[in-house]
Image 1 (tube, rainbow, N blue to C red):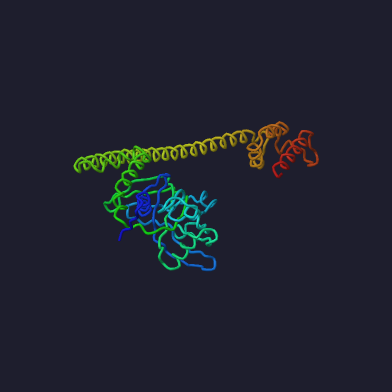
Image 2 (spheres, rainbow, N blue to C red):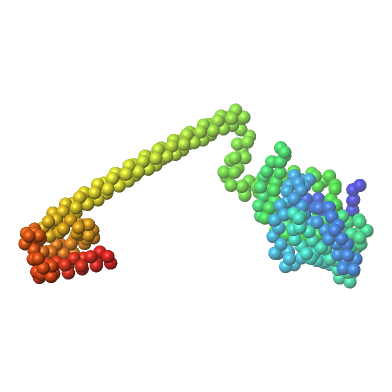
Length: 355
């Protein structure tokens, strides 16, 4: 059943209110949602409602629940049917324009925008009492949100064009009658075109180009896809070849390092052996001249540790090449000064070796 009034201006206003899915002159979007009554507190004159959800609405739109509530929380007024600037049926009146209450505990709960609507009493405005009684008695079962979406994107869900509204800044929440007349549906075509144009302005050129490609010829799309696959295969082959070459070079370098290490160790071993032979030859050259065979091990060790001290000790040693048992004095207490010096030097060398 439709509602008609004699005043044509009031009739147009009624039609606008019943078709709240469209955009109003103030640039805001309006969406009607059936009230999910969580609780009614008669003492507090409040009702808990779900004001918005992410469900695809009758206009094939999704309102993301990413609400910016800073502005609304600063002044959370509740109006009747978004009536901010004029009379609803019979011209402007203070009662129709005044807020009928305020909202509290506004926020996103489990993915839906919820709020508690608290109504003032008849002393503030009689209309508030009527709306409050309408909620209590079940004649009012819908709320509408007025908001500004900062981003509108085009999507396709199950083959249906859908517009996703996000970055939504909340301006108002209003109880309202459920708009179920055909004129609301008739207006949706114009609003959908408006949202499509807005989405095109906000969609990057690259993304628009990708969406336009979906209308291309299937054979052409398949050829482009095959070309992309072939290009990716070439890139993959080049990458694999580069990795293989890198692995081969690494293995070759590792082998070369190993070979050089072996050669170095062998050279060190040869040098050490040659040096030992030279030391042995040098010490042996003094045997029978200044060293006895018994002194060879200690002087060999000294020569390897400190050549300068070795040379000093050899210089201090007496020449024993001319000594024989026949010419040695028969008294063992007889020693020359040179022999005493040689003995003292030997003792110092032995002391250093032991230290």
